[in-house]
Image 1 (cartoon, rainbow, N blue to C red):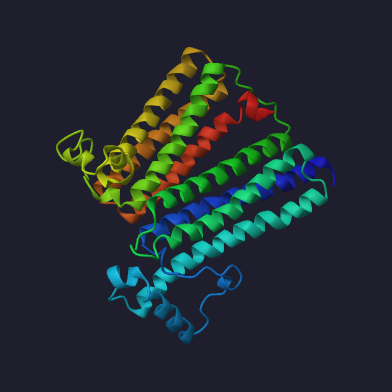
Image 2 (image 1 turned 30 degrees about the horizontal axis):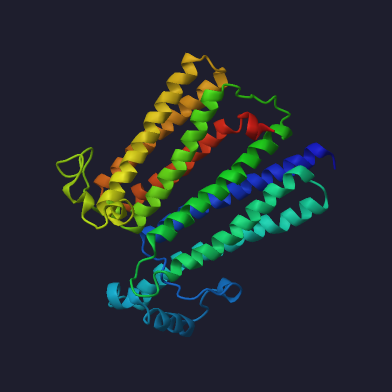
Length: 346
């Protein structure tokens, strides 16, 4: 098999891996929005692959669920059919994670043995594999935080879990772009403007920080306070911003302050994207780069609109999940531009 065909196979494998992670973010968002994440109170790496096979299995799982805070405090009146719904949501979430791991691991072993992947690139694939394994372990670490006293997972752990998913996806996507360019034998566009390179890299980092902030909002249910825009209630800066003591903790644990942080980060991302758009035209960068920045700006504005709609709808599930996926699309487009930076293109 010639090298071009080998490259094409690796490209398709990476593209499918990106798609699987994209769907995983969708499933994870639905699991959070339907409050299904604490329905499975055990983590069994192998036996956990099998779902309940009969009614007796369901009853046993339901009885285990009843021993934990979520049932006692939030769902004391839940019946078996309702439990089945939240269980299936979390079950699909966990099994999908295992599918991603196996889909990445098994072909990777084959591709390395058959020398489909250059030696200089192999370290990147092993880093992704380690990240996927750590993500699974961290997911259970996150769930455990909601099985102790309070029936809520730690919003810190939720945010880290979400951000790691974005990092895995982003890493896979950059490798996908790399193999696509080789497969098509495309002449690479190298962005040599150092200021532009800095701004677009900063923009990607800001997007990730905003995603982390979004996880904090979700973990604290902060989207259900001050469902108005652009003001929070009747003020830009709400009175209860510093309700907690010491003051700095409000930025991390006060739902009001955390929602405010997320608003500011989202708006800052939009303003920076506007600046990048103007800069790309002022400095007359390559047309392809200008088109990519225009697409990024358009999608960022749509994402801001979705964020406002999520807030005004009191976090309606269809809008909220679209907003979460919108963040992944914005991140994807920023990486589509970043792939042409000198230190990424090597």
